[in-house]
Image 1 (cartoon, rainbow, N blue to C red):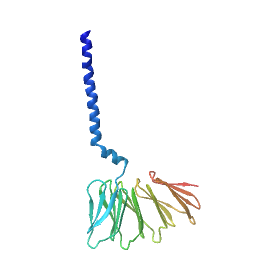
Image 2 (spheres, helix red, strand yellow):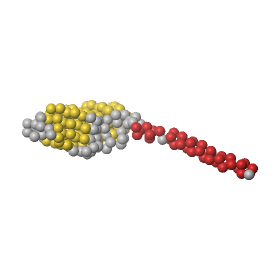
Image 3 (cartoon, rainbow, N blue to C red):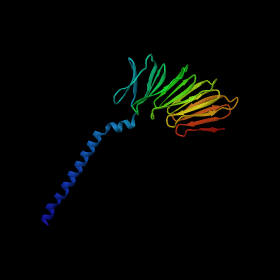
Image 4 (cartoon, rainbow, N blue to C red):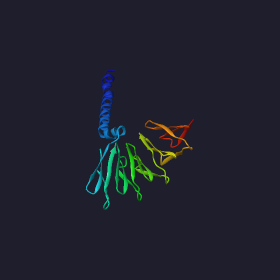
Length: 224
């Protein structure tokens, strides 16, 4: 019996050591992986600047990303919001994606002039006299929608993950998640009265109906 009482601690010591080692292992894992956990909860901001003959994106992490300018190509404007960046030159539009750490371009057409733009953390929207361009930061991709010969954009609204361009003929929606532009035409004499937006939903109220567009659905819903 005495030998049994004396052996009891020998069964407990390995368990205590094992628990301590397990705690140390968890601390080591947490120390090695804080940046991954942190970046999941918070997006990294980027700053856009011009250095001589190139435009440079400076994200919060990683190395700077440069885009050379062509001969006689100059920067018209450059801005950023959160992880998305925009640089407009005399020849093209440059969108920067912090998620992919790269620049992506879309060429401006002959006599195509930028009239207004919006820079949001997850997307860019640029309206010219010929087209409406949208850039998705998460995919690093541009989409373009041509305007009609006499079609002009009267309103441009963006918030969160949804943006909308209003012309006399139609409403054009763009989402940070779904691909391309989504268009819905107005009936004759239908007038836009108001536009309400959250980060993921846009509602266009007209004299005839209400039109809703949701960021992850990719289609217009009509309500009368």
